[in-house]
Length: 204
Image 1 (tube, rainbow, N blue to C red):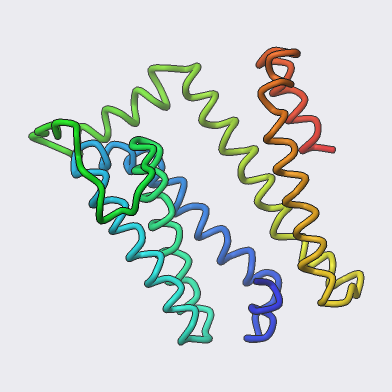
Image 2: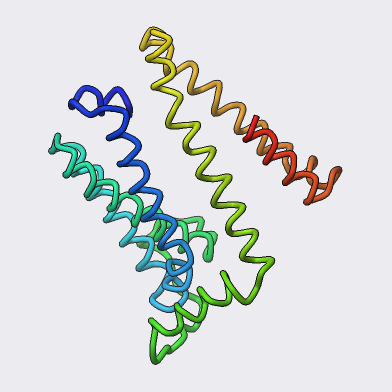
């Protein structure tokens, strides 16, 4: 993606602004999206998320300005969050249009106040949940930042473009192997030590 941005005249600062906008859109809607999936319907959220995804990539395909890319990132971030909120709640295994809603949708008189109540509980009342959300957000942002830096670093090292796919594949295999053994590591060391280890590795 960095090569794509560079080809359209964007600098590294522009790249990080775009990715920051994506992250802000995704984080801001993370809690409300799960609530929306429960109240409005998971199927609707999945389909809307896919439509927004499509709109974001459509924008990238037919435009070439920073402002247009900014709009695309907002669409992608919002779409990603809607899909995450819905499929996490549903753990779906079919195509979105074929889904059947089995839960009884809650009738909420005031959705805004309900979302504010959920936010207050998640970020103020339940301190343990709040710390987990913040920790997850910080670690997620840190790992995403590292991922975004891969291509600029390769460009700085003047690595051949043909190596990018190979290097990215190796990095993703590392992620896959770590995920494969993560539960065993947590069972052996415990959650507190595992989180400390994650934090130290990210800082390192």
